[in-house]
Length: 405
Ligand SMILES: Cc1ncc(COP(=O)(O)O)c(C=O)c1O
Image (tube, rainbow, N blue to C red; front, side, top):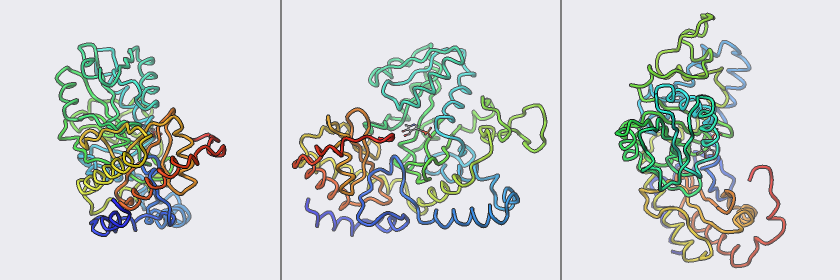
C-alpha cells in the first residue's frame, strides 16, 4: 500500500471526523492511547468550569448543586454501555489496583476454597495485589503459564483473575468461554479490562461475567491518573462486602453513625471522597464515544492493526510480532519483540511517533480508532523501517532511561 492509498482510505473512513474531538499536536502520530488516552477538547472547557465555577464560586455547595456526590455512579453508568453492563453495575472510584483488591478480597470471603489462580506475566499490579490478598486472607496464589490456565481451573480454586487483553502481547481471552468453564467448576472470575474497555466490544452481561475492574486513563481518555471503574453483576452486589469499608460506601454517610451499614447496590464499593476533577475529566473522555458504536470502532481497529502488521512484516523483518493475527484473539494494540526495543522506541518518539516500550524487549503501538487513521499507521511504519534500516536508534541519547519507560 502507498501513502496515497492510505490517505484515500482515511477519506472514506466514516469515523474520520472523530479526531476533531481531541486536541492532538499537529504532525504527531500518537500510538499510545492504550497507556494515556489523548486529551478530549471537551475536557479543557469542562475542567475550566469545574475549577472556576463549581469549585471557585459554588464551593462546597457543588456536592449537591453540581452533582459532585453522584459523579461516581453517573460516570459509571456512562461507561456501562461500552462494556455491556447495566447502568447500576458500574461505578468509578479509586485506582484499578485498589478496585482489584476490593473485589478479590470481597469475593474471596464468599468461598470456602483457598486458591486464587492467575497467569504468569499478567500485569504486575494484578499479581502483586492478588499476592497481597492471598497473604492477608490465608489463600494460596497459584500462578501458571497462560496455556495452563484452563486446565488449572480445579476444585480447590476459589477465584480466577485474568486480564482480558494482555498488556504486552495484546492477546485476548475468550471471556464467555472462560467464564462458562470457570463457573461450571465453581470458580468465580475477576476480569481486568484495562486494555479492553473502549478498545474492543465487550458484553459482560452476555458473557456471564460477575466481577471486573478497568483503567480510566487509557482508551477511555480520562487523563493522567484518572479514577478507575469496577463492575459487579447485579445479582452479586448484595452478597459482597467491601473490605475497604469507608464512609462513602455507607448507606448514610452523612448520618455519621459509629456502625457501618453498606449502601445498597454498587455504591457500597466506594471508599473515600470522590476525586471530582478526575471524575469530570473521565466523564469528558467517556463522552468522546458519543454516537459511535464499539462495533464501528472495532472494525476500524481491525483494519488498522492488520495494516500495521502487514506493512511491518514487509518493511521491518527484524521485528517479531507477538500479537495474534486473528482479530478475535487480540485487543487494539500491536507489539513487537526486539532486543533494542527501548532504543527503537526512543528514536521513534524523536521522530514524532509515540508508542511505548515494555520491558524487557517489547515495542508497543496502541491503535485508537477515535483519533488514529490509515495514513498515521503508514507513516509510523515508514519511519520505523527507516530507523531500523539506518540504525539511527544506536545513537547513545536513545539509551537514556527516565523513571517512566
Ligand atoms: C492490565 C492493567 N491493570 C492495571 C493497571 C494499573 O492500574 P492502576 O494504575 O489504575 O492501578 C494497568 C496499567 O497500565 C494495566 O495495564
